[in-house]
Length: 395
Image (cartoon, rainbow, N blue to C red; front, side, top):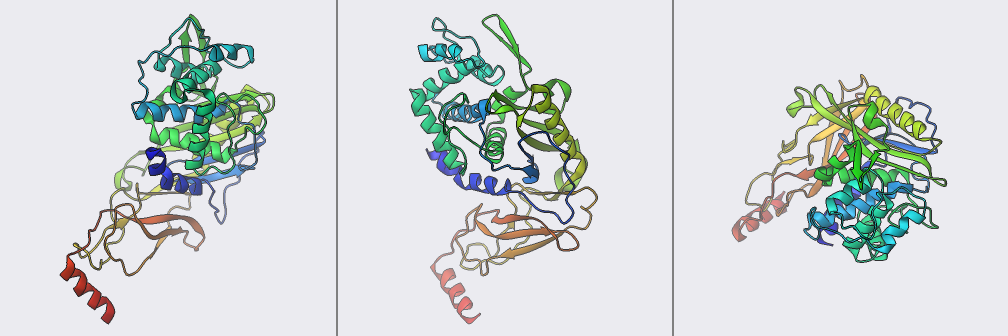
């Protein structure tokens, strides 16, 4: 619970970022044969294109992104260990009766948590999902409660989980945008576990199964993330790729990595979901330039502080500031700072005190980013506060 609360502010900011940004002359995305989709630049935190991204949809096995996030959190909090052996319940074994994908565990086995992670991520095993859910939540029903609590912490208003596997059930729903939020949190919060999503095949119980994400074999820059299919959901895929681009290194010099994530829901086949995702990834990388405007930890402005131990405070963008603009429009970007004034101590690192507005040369808005305190400024002693109070009164 403590971790959920500590992430709440970041989660809300991520949800807002995924709401999209408008450009004066935005590149037109390609025609996409999917019921809904979204293209998200994780480097700049900007949505580049979307269609019906908030429409309710059956998430199928994309549900397992949230199932696994809750498991990753349990491992992170030392409530579960990778080498811990997990008994397989009859309920987990019964998943083979439901007709979904399987890891093929049975009640005579005690797979480790690490093996079950491989089984749920690479093989999309419903039986593995149930076994892990019971290990973390005690019961599947209690684990579903944990999933929905995490969805609330992420600020997902259009997502409700009824099970851990993604099999069709009344009221079990999500959206392209909400699923992108969950995927983004996996990549950012748990990079050590995100690495599992690039594994191309996994063998367990003498049964070798390939990862159903066909892009892992087609595009060497693709390193995740998850497929899904039911008759109600159609063929779905969340894919992500990281490619090297110039001028994204420290201080805008040298090459750096740029990551884009795509969501396509309800396509007609496994090939179609891969083809549409590949097309959207290529379009996002080719139609937009992503630029570093400010580096992480580097102050953008250093205004005076009242009643503080320090006479000034360093303000900037948390994590640095990257922006994505239509290709060729990045040369004349302008930034404008809007901030609270006067700034009165105490000021805490990460505290928002204004907004950084980025526009094109013509004034068209590109993105608004929180202006935050980069280094804490503690409150001065009683005499310093009294002196600044007098100066403020005179001012």
